[in-house]
Image (cartoon, rainbow, N blue to C red):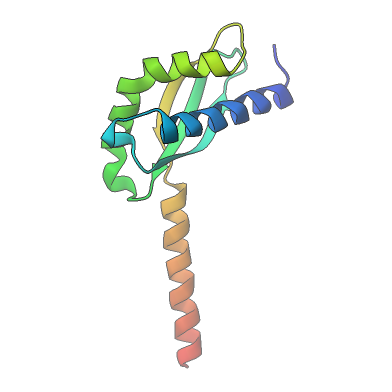
Length: 119
């Protein structure tokens, strides 16, 4: 079984290669302007959980996840060719709300600063 450091290196490599594939080789319009925020690989290397987000936010989440599911076979084969593992993990896609949450928090902090300056 791989160590935690090895699992993290595998996850980072999958994230990098997946981002590259989405930018250069995927022509599905549902998958334009999305980015991979995180990848987590389980200890058995059976599954890789891929977390994605889009510039437009949650409004596109269902569309993006459906596009990724339909391209999952191609993505898995392409990633297996680029990342050397005996058995490549199956890909599971999840929506990551973190960028949207960060934008919301930033806007709240901006409002508080403006309110403080207005006093």
